[in-house]
Amino acid sequence: MDDLIARISASAGIEPEVARTAVGLILAFLRKEGPAQDVDALFAAMPGAAEAAAAADAGGGKSLFGGLMGLAGKLGALGLGMGEMQAVGKEVFGYVREKAGDERVGQVAAAIPGLAQFL
Image 1: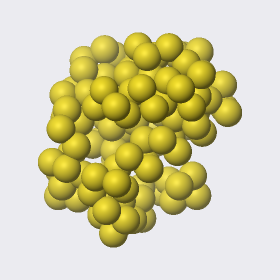
Image 2: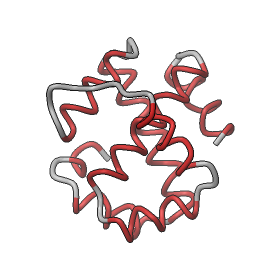
Image 3: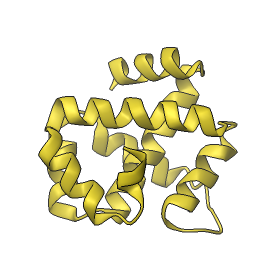
Image 4: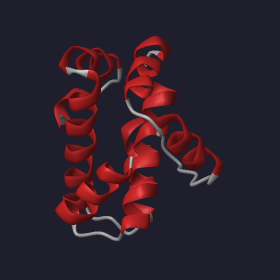
């Protein structure tokens, strides 16, 4: 995960700890909203993904909204603007594709309403 955090920090221009928290929030979102079998396969291909998601869940970060709106609210609470959120998302899903493949990412994205439009 450290290489992903470094990529995000550089591309989005954010601090590594903010990048780490954002990655955890995105992975926790996938864990909660996606089909368990497909998300498990994604996580298996990415060492440290399950731990990052669990840390984000343990950290709280409640939102009034669920789904993508809730995720955006949590990322916004980290101080990320829309451009930074898009940069983080692009890097996370690019990394996931590298590790788990397009087909698996597509299956997860198709199962989460609205997610495919951001990939």
